Image 1 (cartoon, rainbow, N blue to C red):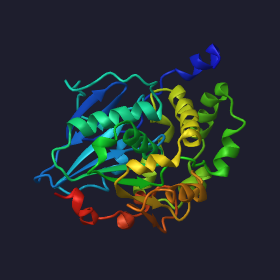
Image 2: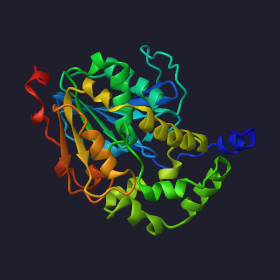
Image 3: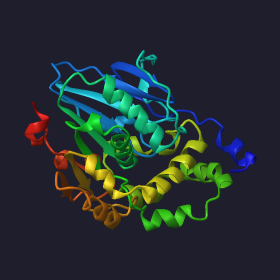
Image 4: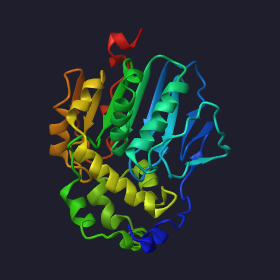
Length: 307
């Protein structure tokens, strides 16, 4: 990448979205892990891994039960979307050798969180979109950590997957130097001009979370690196990665204009039979923001994962 492009791309992006958060936030490398306070005794632990240009608030209303311990990843070089909490550096943090902004780096953050934070044995790891790829890469890195964990892959980026042709058409002509300009253009356009196409029918929570997408990362370079690494990861990662996934669910949207649905389904069908595929009627890539009805209940965990 040209030095002049890199200079343009590393200009900081100010944070534009945060919510009140009650709990602790741990810095892990160039990312973070937040643990929400829960009022009841924790019966389940959910670790949420957000997608490209999203933030951890994607999961906060989906998992709001007082008995759910919610642990939320902030991927590398993304803004931490919390008010009122000072991040701390945990004594268990281990240096990460991968390049930040990649699926491999964020998988290491997830594995450190899973190793050190859950206080229950009923653990669900829920990833949306790119977050699905982060989970699969984390399992590939440390399969032994996931033997009893349940995995929910929502509209996931998968091995041998593809982005939607519409998104390819937009990305193809964009050189590195054009990114800052393109993002300014998108941010100045009313979201209604492109929102319906990519985001489907809006509701208040979707509007709230998706209106500030291009402010999620700390710089433009992370956006470029996320995209290039994701495309490369999908093409080079083989579906034999699924053999390490013991229990879980693929949540496939009815309509998806971000990732290529047929390629997603074809990949999911390569997994061993322990993974369920739920083809939802969700009208967009954002399945659980459209409706929580498709999310499997905790009681659907296999007996082996419950003792």
